[in-house]
Length: 99
Image (spheres, rainbow, N blue to C red):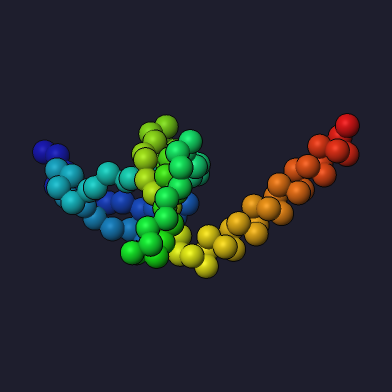
């Protein structure tokens, strides 16, 4: 006769719990996002919603990708514009130092 429940414990130890042997209460673990990259598409500004939208591609640890949108407030757009300008200057300086 088979077991009617499984006794489970997290990897590395911890509190045990039980689950029915038929797997009825088990759920698949979703893949974790590993990084998000901008897509080669134009960002758009929606003046009615007062937000910008940047198309992005979300990469997951199982190799799957999904298209999405990064939504930014006007304050965030200005903040990131300043930060990107700093990145551009740092890149140019690094290129000049390497030459």
